[in-house]
Image 1: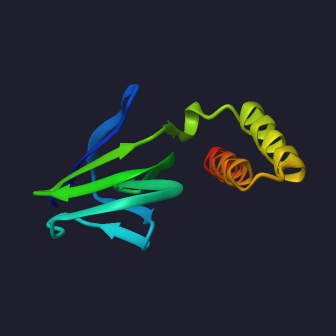
Image 2: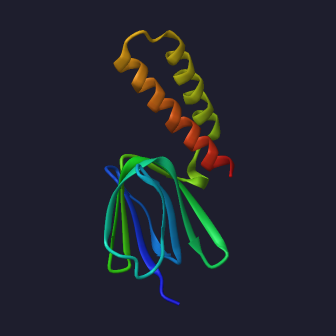
Length: 132
């Protein structure tokens, strides 16, 4: 069975590299499932979980947007930020969620409100990935 060579990279460096049977993620245009021999593709990613399947195991990575590129059985994910499921500190993620919720309650400025919404979405994503 053929596999996909997957690399997840952030501005801070590589997060994960390996061979997987399938990659599932949420692009801004909707859910994507990438299998070996997939057509070339570039897509912007939403704040979401990346699910990497190998045999009967699934690894999860929380990403805070970025881009996915597929070419010749290689999947490259260039993420603004990414954390493996086992590296997520749930206490910190819960604290970030509470801070974002408090900022949403107090913000009158549209730009600050939008930034607080994004922070809340990132925190909820990290919590969902960390708890799954």
